[in-house]
Length: 444
Image 1 (tube, rainbow, N blue to C red):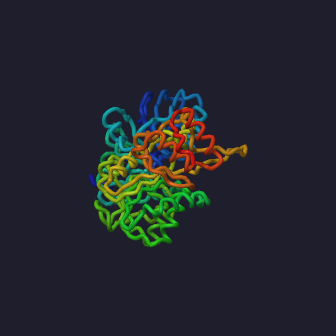
Image 2 (cartoon, rainbow, N blue to C red; image 1 turned 60 degrees about the vertical axis):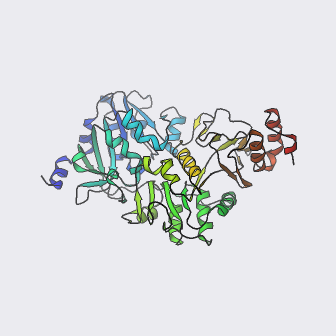
Image 3 (tube, rainbow, N blue to C red; image 1 turned 90 degrees about the horizontal axis):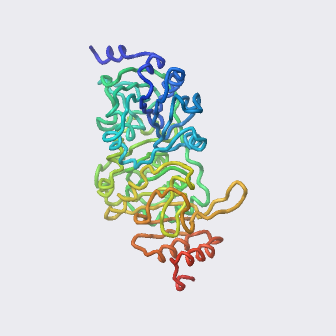
């Protein structure tokens, strides 16, 4: 049987494909643009037949039909490894649950501890050798694909094909059923225009980025501002080794700054684990021989990151307390996003001989009632610690950048207060005194 005969023999409607699912099953959906929307709709249609089906997702755009059709969660229970905006809303409403993790350990969880009865994935069209690319979700899917008892593929002609190793694609022989979604437009995540604060924070980072630096960037206005500053700078031959490839890297490519030529490992190749951005980004990464996608156990491995040597990791956080504890994923107990790979890159970049890690935030924010709040706090109060104080390195606001590595509690308090919003510095000093982490000689 040829690969095309095998393909046709497994081709069916979404409604036929989801008959594989049984009550009590664990079902994994693909991450981000690998979300199988047609299969999700078909599974939701089976609501009356199924009970206690547990579903895992990750950074998935909504709406997710199995959530929408079952507000009491008698039939479907949705769990996410990392909240996007829709998943955050569902967690807020008690209609979904969060699963703590480190991205580098995701595949380990699956191989050692988790059951996947059915994996449902959106994939790029099959190639001449019978393989489907896992596209911009490949880094997060190697675990569920490896252990899934049954696999359903939803083919989306819009998905880019990103060069990668054998684990970043799946052969037609592994599929139990195949459906076709035609050309379904992809989820696009455009970074907001950088604010003045974003630009000031980015300006604090520029002195630490030199010729040949390999960059790991998150997504958002600040990385966008950094890309604009670097595009106008004299820095050359930047590299990419990142969990998430976003439009910030495309801006560097357009400016001729992203060559990857000086990388100690994978010279000439930009490495990623995931890709989310605009259509222009998807067009750039499609079949681009200068880029490669790999499993997150590789991309986010601290020893591999450290081996890059001249690596700068830049991520965002929400709050930092005077002890140096960093909260990047929750406000109190409200889950905002997830740990993701922040701690992976903090660890790896800190271990690199000429590397460093930066966690960035505005010094304050204004709530919907117009009240200003400090992001530097006396102590975290219920916030989930993403980066422990023992591993905190550079913390950056628009007022400066401070290195906490090796510092005592009173030195940390002094440093962090120096980059807090001026309106809160005296109040923070009083809190530090009460917490016995302040020297009178600190006061300037």
